[in-house]
Length: 92
Image (tube, rainbow, N blue to C red; front, top):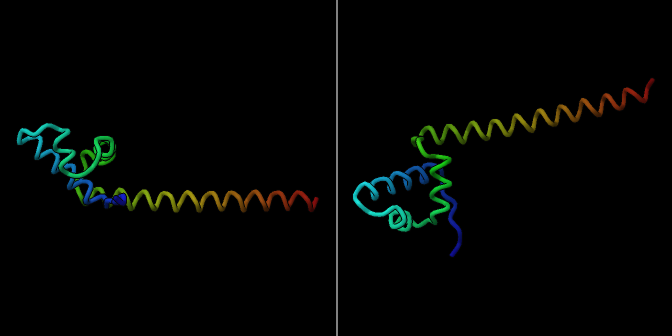
């Protein structure tokens, strides 16, 4: 069976579904099995997305992408600076 990649909104919905099922008296492992993921995946998701709502998750992912883009830009500029400094040493 191919592995499914879930969107953050889907993950939050599945976490809420497990909460509902456990509040209805099902055991946690049965509820997790019912949503179609492993217990390890569920607990990893809960750690990352536990108290967030759908719009907050979307904003979190946007910020993470922007942060990664900015980190790449800083590293590129730092590398350019080092190259220019090395080239300037050769002129003296």
